[in-house]
Length: 259
Image 1 (spheres, one colour):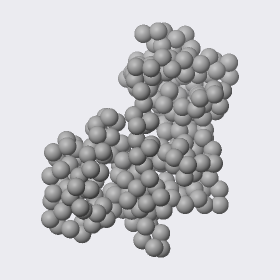
Image 2 (cartoon, one colour):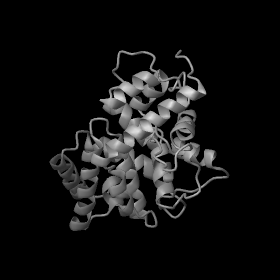
Image 3 (cartoon, rainbow, N blue to C red):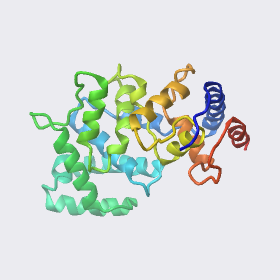
Image 4 (cartoon, one colour):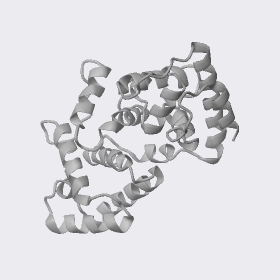
């Protein structure tokens, strides 16, 4: 197991990453800001679109920018074709499904269309309320809410994005009072960063702990709340996942930040 960094060391690293990200983002605006205004979870179609985007973002062979481009074009395609999400994603329209598969291929979706549909069908089935619509409902407390959502997305290819879904629902006002500690994603890049820098000894053990640590160290001390974005961009851009260094420190982080 990796050693645990001191509180002072963790603070130094967080400041280095936060300041690096502020400079980085000047030339690399986050795509997240471009789609938040397009999501309308007041409608069932809007809720399905959010689940669809989560699934596209989860396709490991897709870069985020490409996933968002496919999402935008699919939404436009559904409107132009006059087709409903439910009839296609739940395989109720054979001719429409064939057209949908062709559109996915045309747009460069690298996965299997039927796998995508099966994943979304399962997610929609588990998130449906009694009236047959997708529902993002708060339980007795926020931890149980996120755990329930995570359980609902088990086996859908979306489950790793549960903290991202929580964040989006917070940002668009649907879950406005959910604490930020439930809104930070730890993908493979972030996990390696957290482990090597000594924030968490085993980032595979508890995604809720990962999210809490990211929130406490990379958000609470700063006026701007970036969730996991600063850590994720730093870790991915500096190759933390493939770096041969097994234990990192603030001096090494500073060296990377200067590059």
